[in-house]
Length: 128
Image: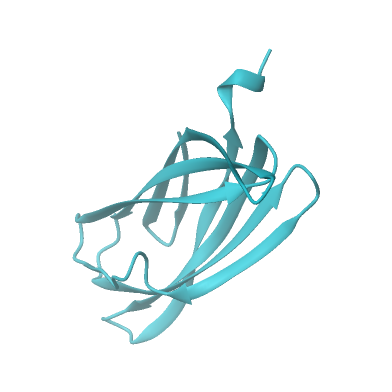
């Protein structure tokens, strides 16, 4: 598990390898990740959007942005957390992801970015 704290918001990430499959003569490696966002600040915050950078060991880099996470824009009171599971496909058995969430602080009405730590995506069968 990797963790990062930005302005009292802790982001924890756990990953797992889902398997490999072939589609149109190409092999893809499926990875899942579970993210827990914990509000350790004194203010209520809302997650507005996400921005991901996905690195494939075959040198492919993909940027993904969008509103919320898995169709939700969670509001977190102090001490609350939100957890979700998602995934990505790579063309190689190794990669990594990182990024940030854009959030709004309800007390100050200001938006801020919360870092998502870099986490590795590894298929266990290829590790020594």
